[in-house]
Amino acid sequence: MPSLFNTRRQFMKNTAAASLGLVTLPSLLLAQKNNPPGNKKIICLGGHPDDPESGCGGTLAKLQKAGNDITIIYLTTGEAGIPGKTHDEAAAIRKQEAINACKVLNAKPVFTGQIDGDSVCNNEWVSRIQQLIADEKPDIVFTHWPLDRHKDHQVASLLTIQSWLRLPQTFSLYFFEVCTGEQTLIFHPTDYVDITDTQEQKKKAVYCHVSQDPPGIYNCGHAAMEDFRGRELGVKAGEGFVRMSGKLQGGMGF
Image 1: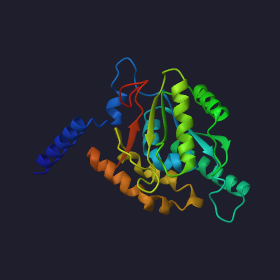
Image 2: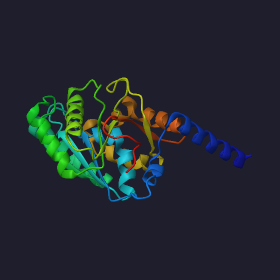
Image 3: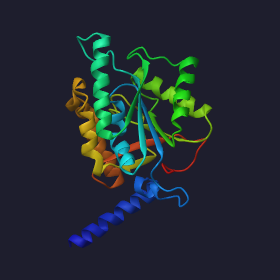
């Protein structure tokens, strides 16, 4: 009976993935014979320290373990994110927390210098982010879903989208979700990643952001999101993404 259960479970998982167009990372990494996995450049651009980690930390960890280089770009340094602290004090604390989280994920941190709560999307900043992304030469870029309650998340997303539109067709763009229902709105994933093996590493990275109440981050929906996206994929824990279509087609492959 156990073997029958496992076989049926695997059958249902594969059938669901095929019928819904779900994508798992390992198959994508091996999808192209002439373009082997590893040695690729991955960027994640988030509005504040803790956004990239909570939104797609499991996927970033999985990509890094597959031999890819990870850069996390923080649009702001979370200056307005610690009650009772000045902007300079909060920025110093949250920058160090981000650096600590990047160590957990084996990622390179980059800080653009925008101000938490006062982020800007204009021609100057489009050019800055475009150049920053171009210099990194990424294969995949992750950023916020543009329909989000937080203005900084929207700005981070729009700056990334504008960069993607203006740069040559060299990288795929994916949107992640944070606190779906409270912050991220109307989010229907096109692609999924099984983060069962990196779920704890993701949690450890999120918990580096001590000033942001890590249990509260999970209580706002992230634990449920990982469980639900995993259920959609047929695994213990997952992360969902929306793929930007238009310039580049295909899954989260290389």
